[in-house]
Amino acid sequence: MAPWSIAAVNISSTTILLTWLPIPSSFSNGRIVEYRISYFKAETPRNEDSWQTVIDGQKLSYNITGLERFTKYWFRMAGINRRGVGVDSDPIIARTDEDSK
Image 1 (cartoon, rainbow, N blue to C red):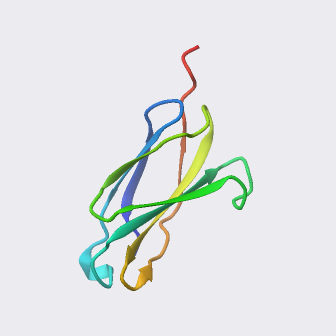
Image 2: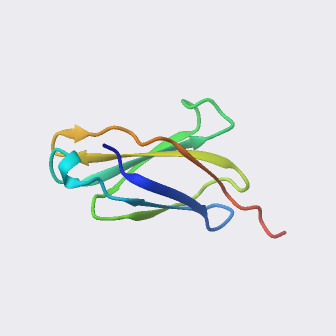
């Protein structure tokens, strides 16, 4: 099972805040030690301009920074335990803000 109730909120022209609920222990095949966040621009093919970051498994939120302004991004998450990477979540989409200029 993937992390669930994932939400993406634009908090600036270059940052998206992701929040989620943890994978229930009965579905994780062991303690979640990390989460993998995969993301890419919605306007480009998935294998171009795509990134991954791995964060501590105790976190339930993360700021994705350094994004392009007023751009749509797709985000997916997966839990990682001693057995490896779990399944990816359904993708969610968010757009960064425009600059106020």
